Length: 489
Image (cartoon, rainbow, N blue to C red; front, top):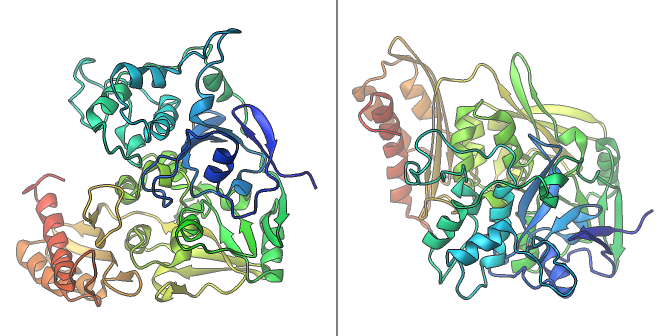
């Protein structure tokens, strides 16, 4: 077995002797790359952002920004990573390095004061700088305010949604983002996109009687999980990484599934869409390209781009959280999950998957292999996330709607709810109150009263039970107002 190694800023280095739970952030800082910083240790501030070479959507390789504070360095075995220090081009002998275009714009436009958050911003900005399909939006080239979230250079400001600055203010940073040009033909990182990313490697990394393991196939992984039912299964580590950092949790055995090819397929069949459980949310978003409007509405509201670059549907469903954002949407879409273990596979409707708080029908040794969304899709959909912040926040309430309305009659209604019970749930009573009824204000107002009574909401630091119930009803009224033209979406 080849020793675990990682390429950082073009130089290969062994991971040993770092313990298996060591984050990429700590690994880098211990090696003098202190531009990568810890701000929150939860993936919410972006001070730790770095670039990783991943399989691309429009090019063989994409430079993807991730939170180094959440990713175990062992998960990057065989992979290629660039930090803020590695972006600048080496200078001639005796001369300093040449600033990267993103770094130069940040300096010219006053995008940094104390500088603590700057390297993370630089890495997130660089990932968007190298996005192959970035292009100027239609309209006047000098109209920077025609779309507040997209610059005249095509820069998507959501790329920075996971980065926080506490002293500079965001206007200079936004100005820098909207001023960057396009990579030149000589840009080495742009050239790197034309080559294949590092292939997944088999990892058997053991230190201090703890192991981080990655197999090459699903069958081998399922056999391993049969032998090690105590193993912690990780993909993007956006949940497990928080447990390691904040609660000091350790696992004797961690099994990575993020690079298994069987869990990374996306297929559009005649009667369903199959989404591999280990595809990141960013990969799903870009591959579907709006093909599932309800998912397209979910993605920008799911945490931040940094988190979505690692988070997976399999992980979000696997944790069983009642406030995860994807379950309400998938419930409204009538999704099912394909569960696999060493004996075979079974398909379970998502409505039957959750059994209790962070509990499900998934047995020890079983993995979520695929999420299946039946076709055709309902034409009237909406996702309403009620939270204290517009982006990068945990939901107080999440409501997803999928309706079939024909000739003014609701033929089918599916409503998924999060944050109002011990599990994500379907609003069955409200669905029944809508179906076969005319899509009118009277019907919707009556169904909204029914929807307010769904679930068992509780009081906590995010919202009161009364507020949560009220938001359920308001969400349906808002959907009706949008579909009838009373308000814009």
